Length: 610
Image 1: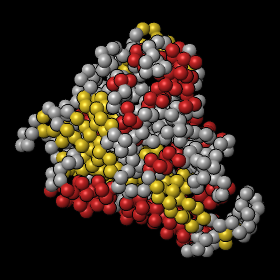
Image 2: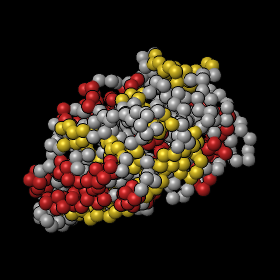
Image 3: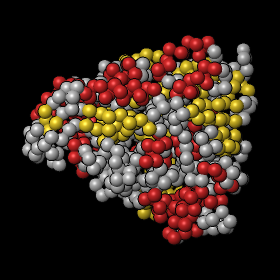
Image 4: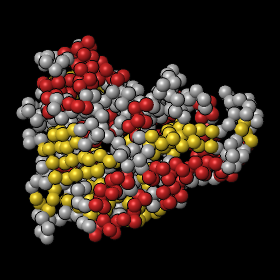
């Protein structure tokens, strides 16, 4: 469900390298790591490298217009979600870290009863069911301006919320749901927020119960979102000092440098042993690698895959190496409503030809050195095997084939010019014509906007450019910083595609994050909050709904195969995260695939030789 945009190989889990065969003719390197043993040291600082992207918002209920997934990196350790995704390396909810002690479904899975743990906020106030109703009231009045909202789901699918006592919440839903989906993808998006400290409409105003009216909830939400965007006050604003996670924010700089220190009143089981965790930004992977080579100032850092040959030297300097597939989906997003070539991109056969011309196995092996999912469809084959349909396991419907791409284009009225640019010679809407809105003489030429600063991204998109040319499709490459892309490219659909934010044609920003259940909810639904390019299909909507309402694998595979075949996006290999970390830093593995660098409360240094 969470489809906020992230840069490839962002802050995700790591495990020690082994080799296994992946699907689709590639070799991907995955495995589980050996834990560090020794006598635990209390204290110490860990410095983590963050490359090419930084947070820009701190209020946990992020505006719908802000799709920067790195905001979660900043906030997850401060305000965790109700459902804590990942238990060690397992893709399951963590019973120790969940904010509830029990969660039950009844009345044909339409009523949820949740008992909150008797934990406390950092200021000593108890966490209660009122904190949940505070979040519910804010979202009920403002869900259209919440990035986490997916059509028809929380909070609009709630008939009422009851709080029979201070720690019990009863959510009466409008229909029955698949409990696994609702827990793993919906409740896993919802934090608890401190009503006793945040239910106000100005910094100088008193705390009240403003959220209990629609007008009041709108005023509180507007105030909190305004404060949440003031980067200069992230570390000083008293609002953000009240947390329920294991960490508090000590420092934040406009360049993205920030530091966590322990929340000394944290109620959860994993009390931080470290004294501080620092995230230090780098604008390019080259700059990060230079720092890594130069000394010991980085304790944990992503390894650029073009520097994979440096592993022996780094291991000799005291680093361990680890890697894990990313829980997400990498893609090139087509803008179906671009004013220039939207009609081209709305033609399925054009997208099919493009996908046939992406040599994904070669990208995995030559660009990512084997450290990537092959990108066979909407669900990674290295992410969770139980979710992979036979079609995806077999390599997906569009395995690399320039001859199939050329035949497809010729069959639809195009003069194909390999190493040149194809032109439409049969305008019209018949089965052998170019299609609606495509004029005679129109060219298959597109601008591909992608994230700059990452050498593997440069190499991947240059390689895609070269293989697209084999079918006469021209990609003009335009690299820009990740933060610039997410700030200047908007959601484009049939009803709204302003020139100011919808002039982009193809976009490769990195990947979209999945929850534990890798549903297409929000990503491929009509007008979904992660559906940046405006893809729309009634059949897709119905298939996604079937995965939300029922739990059969057949329903999930039907959605998955339809999404693979219809190409709402162009599927790409998803680069795994390869990290190096100090050999005396314990707790890194087994790594959480959903929040690796975001749960340093389980890390600690060990004494040498102990």
